[in-house]
Every structure is written in C-alpha cells, then in structure tokens.
Image 1 (cartoon, rainbow, N blue to C red):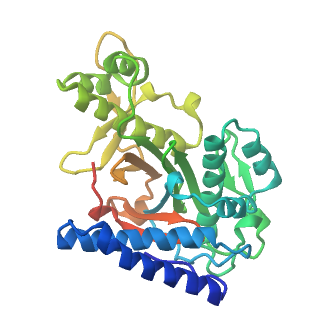
Image 2 (cartoon, rainbow, N blue to C red; image 1 turned 135 degrees about the horizontal axis):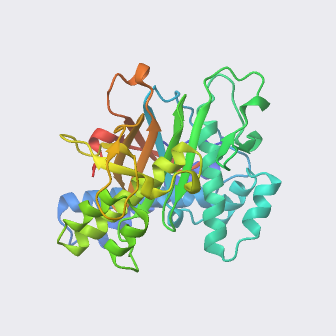
Length: 350
C-alpha cells in the first residue's frame, strides 16, 4: 500500500498520529473476545480505515503529487479500480470536481440522483488521475488532459495537444457498476475492459436471453450446464468478455453484434480465451467458426471478490511471441491511497 505525499502540515500529521494511537488503544476493548491473529488483523484494518478517513476529512485544497509509474510493458495491461462507497469525504469529492473540464462538470450535474453524480465524478477522476501517473518524463497535470472521440464514439486522449510528449501514446478504457469503477491502460495497442457484478441477476430465462444475443456455439455451451446458478455465472462471464472485445475494437455494438463472434475458453489454460469469428449465421444448426484467436488476447479476473473483470487487447505478435497477457491490478482512492493488489498470476483467475 502506498500513501501519496501531502504538503507539509504538522497539524495534519499530529491529527493522524493521535487518531491511530487512540484507535490502537480502543481496539483492545472492541475485539477482546477475538482470537489473537484475527485480533491483530482487525486492529490493523481499523487503523488503516481510520487513517484513510482522517486523510479524506483533512484534505487540503492544494493538489498533492500523484505517485508516478513506469509505462506498461508490451502486452501488459494496468487495471485500476475504485470502490465508490469508500470515498466519503465531501471535501475530497469537491477536490475531484476541480479536475474536470467544464463540459464534464455539466454532464455530471445533469445526472439525476446523488449516487449517479458521485459515480460519474469518480469515473472521470479515475481516468484523469490514472493517465497522468504515467507521464514520467513530461509531467501532465490531470486537469489539462483533453479528450476526443473516434469515428464510433470511443473516447481517446488527444495527444496532439502535447507537443513535448515523446512517450508512446497510452490507450485507456473504463467500465463501471454501481459499486466498482475500473480503468485499463495499455501502450501501443487498443484495450477494452468490462466489469460486472458477480451477483447480477438475469431477469429473463438465461438460455432464451442467450439465444437473442450470443452465437450458437455459446448457446450450446450454456445449454450443457445443468446447474442454473453456474449457468447464470457463465452467462455473465461471457457477456463481460464479449463487451470487452467490442470496446477494444472501438467500433460500437452495431459494428460487432455479440452473435457474430464466439468466445471460447483456451484449452489447457485458466482465464485465457480465444475469439472465433462467425463465418455464416444460421438458425437451424451450429454455425461454423473460423479465424480463432483473431488477433486479440483476453483475460478474465475477479476483483474485490465481488466482480468479474474482462480485459481484451489487440495481439501484437512481434511483442508477445504468443505469451499470455500480463495484468497488474491496483486499487486506488486518488490522492489518498494506492494499493498494489497483485499481478494476475496471483489473483483469482476465472
């Protein structure tokens, strides 16, 4: 876990230390009946929460520096995520709003409901602060970032506005649910991500819903699963992977309907998938597929024990040599806390 550097403030430092010391004393009474090892973990977690709350409450109106990072390596994706329910400070949210452009502020203000406004603000903050971390040679203020959209409406950083920027251009993509917001970053190759709540309910019959949107191969796969709960989860995993591919492609759903391609688990692997393009659509029999792999790499992970996260990047054969995608995951509260979760090999891969 990394805490960012704040402008010197003896009062703030004293307040945090006092809060931690006070909490470390009071925790003994709170967890007296808990076994020793659990007691230690609980005490540490309560102290961490206390420090984070104090930092959010006493956040100054000066922007501290973001922790800078090296650019992602070829065929590597950095995935950042934030939990909206962990950002509670009104002063911190006000601080985040200062990062947005006037048009972004207007878009947020027009949303109905405080929860929607907060999540939209956090999504834009996550994008701006994530991208700004990687400008190690020519620092970019997150407030100065400008964006454009491609022909199909996919957001991109407008790097032409940075004349002195010599690093390879970063690609990003964002996805969110009510309880988690994620941003993926790559260099050189397009990226698409999607996150879905593992407990998301399907209002309609799973197979009937799949027949409307999925390829015949995928419907056949789902039909072989007798357990309704397992079938629901596999449906969501497929949806997450397909959404990530369409977003990486950058052409929108109309240019790549879900039933025109098949996602298949790669034999002998866990969390790796092939893309197979549908050669001909039929309704009476299983369609034939070709072009498996299709020049794209996939990864499917669990985030925070509550969400599936799918990542899709274009396969740069010269850089990858056939190796699987590498994923590094970090959890953040921008300007307050960054936590390295792990590389994908240590995460729960599904």
